[in-house]
Length: 68
Figure 1 (tube, one colour):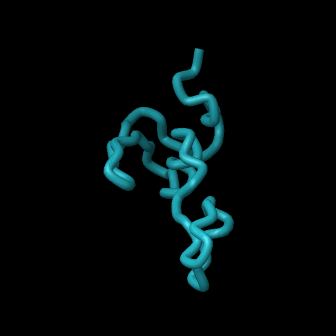
Figure 2 (figure 1 turned 135 degrees about the horizontal axis):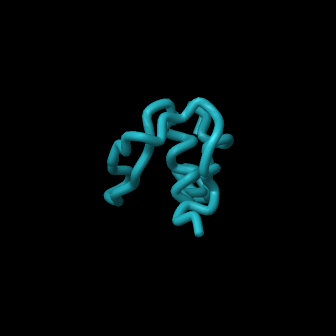
Figure 3 (figure 1 turned 60 degrees about the horizontal axis):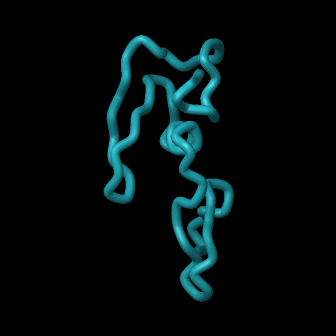
C-alpha cells in the first residue's frame, strides 16, 4: 500500500530515487527532485496552506494568491 495516497507510484517527471526532506508550517514532509512545493504538499496530504486575512477561511494552493 502506498504511504502517500495522493502520489503516483511511477510515471511522470519526478525522480523517485532520492528523497528530499523539507519543513512547512513546523512539520516535516518528504518530496522528490522535480516536485514543486505545491505538488509535494498535496502528495503529503496537505490541503490547507494558509488562511484568509479577514474571515480566516482555509486556502489551498489554488486560492493562495497575492491578494490574500
